[in-house]
Image (cartoon, rainbow, N blue to C red):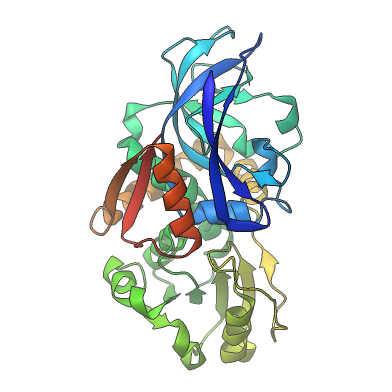
Length: 347
């Protein structure tokens, strides 16, 4: 099959171009047309950590380039795998492209895993594909929030106990909003969102935060009780400023993303050493603690509550074609996407 992919310069995320190649479908493989995928700040984080977190390794690209992973739905167009038929649809981790050739294994009525050799040493949580399920609701909402909300849910599971003050950077990002919604629902946290001045009104209107502070007023932060800082921006200077403002009240500093991927440097910050949050490890712990059924029930309850709330402030925008995908990714890298928009690409 012919596949058009978005190739990103690993040394300059703002530089990308489209390329088309022909991919053969071998024995034990299946070709999928990628029907829809979401593009969000989360994809910029994947690209920013493409090397150190091995996100570039899921979908090999020519030397010096990377293919950013995206979440969405694909439809089988050719299969040489028992249990996978032409027309079967699956939700999962796709390349930013209009198609992909996978090596499905462990095929069940629920889904399958990609057993391609180059993915065998990568995080298993990204290798699973679930058969499309109408019971999960609007597929555009699933593509936009399903992978992000799992991170939000796991953050809440890991950090939500105890209560106090939670300060979240990049408060307009969808993962931060999901986490803030879960924390606020607990009733034992004062949830503070940090954002750019132009996004203050939007962030406040979501209702996910108790208060919203623009970045240029970070020095006004205070904590009357135990505080945690959850950093979705990855901006070292901002992190240092938050640490300095919260002083001894800061109990933990957690780095989740890199929406401010282009801000260089990591100035020394007083207080606790920042720790990187790796969702797959927390997922494994929670599955061990709760079992699959218990985990699924908790996740479903949180998902239902958050997506119902998000309907009040999210505007889903549909775009068509890989050229649009290129433009949108470039805009995301530059921080030029309206946080009230959820962008879906039909390549």
